[in-house]
Length: 531
Ligand code: NA7
Image (cartoon, rainbow, N blue to C red; front, side, top):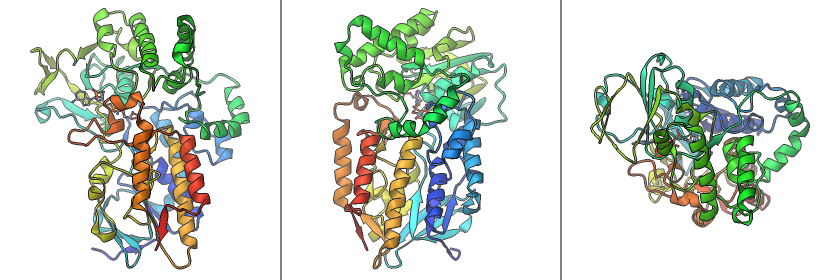
């Protein structure tokens, strides 16, 4: 081991969370080092460079809230941002605040160990580098460890195989025969983007998705002016909302409306665009009342029938489970299947048997030949990134051990037995618009660090086991009655083989999360003890 470099705070990850953490902690006067295994800033938006990659949060909210001047001036031409635009924005913030001097790239945290005597974390990184820090702020990302499907024969494929989270920019799809496995947020974007380029595209679809139009397009004249003039109110509304997506959250019950009113209400939000608007702005009970939920499902299935001309493709695209996965929106996904060069294999009817050297072999005996196979199969979300690093807290307890029943964290930021360690976008954070969630968590941890810095006879803060267990029970309780719970997806860890499903989000809403945070801060962190 090389001689450790002494710093005050180590921020691991230079994505949206790592950038803001570095900004906040340097503003507290701490000596901060931020590291990332990538060769530049960006996190999610550094890695996810597949065709069509974009945010489904409206541009005016997919940014930091704390720089008013930047909010008013930084350009965004369309309602939604594409990946290169987000990456450019993040680079711009890093440059504007001169944060790069605190950052080191191609440096991966491999192990972190707490020493209770010196009250320091020793963090060993790639290239033999070691840091000794009072605070360890993990901004490892919610969705960063790619998940590969558990299908036999993957290595035998002789064409080009690519995961969307590790896109190969040398890959030219023009005129190619392409198969894609996965039709979540990512798959829907890729399919829509590449269909016009490729010779043939086949989507292998296990669960169809309910998707609504995003409303993407250039912003009309005067739109930006209106947003700029109202930004203060906009943020106030976002912070006091549950989902923080800037859409109205209504309480009207679906079944109280007449069939005509229902149709009209769904039609209005469909036309306005945005997945969260469709789910929360027409009626307030789509995620809790199965009867109401089925009304939304019927509406979207009706749209699929209207849009998709080939009845076989339309039948394949229509989901029959509740509308209770992450709400998707798109820029013409269902329409894409009207193209002659785009087809769909309904894996509810025939499963994938294996990947063969030539392509994909399905159980009905068909061998689908491909030049390129794309995996849009998602991520080992939330804990996936943590469990590959050896993090050891007080009394030699590993984070793996601590999370053997599933990942938990008090307020989504602290684990008992891991003093002065914080997580951002770790387990049990608010299920809401992520930039806003990230900021809210960082505001909390920065306040906790500031508090610790002022302690006279102690150097560390550690959350109590009781508080962490209480938060976990609260998360379990809050998800009761939500239709999300019954639908297998990454949101509960059900997408990764061998991973125990658990409650990985706080479904109380961002507003309640922020109330909790304000209360804990104003009371002097009663759930923590100093030592
Ligand atoms: P998701 O939402 O986890 O989607 C992964 C997709 O891959 C989904 O359609 C899965 O089908 C499919 N999948 C995974 N394994 C297989 C196998 N073995 N066979 C067939 N299909 C498979 O990941 P995304 O990257 O799209 O989105 C993640 C988040 O990023 C998203 O929610 C946004 O927050 C941003 P399934 O539905 O499990 O049947």
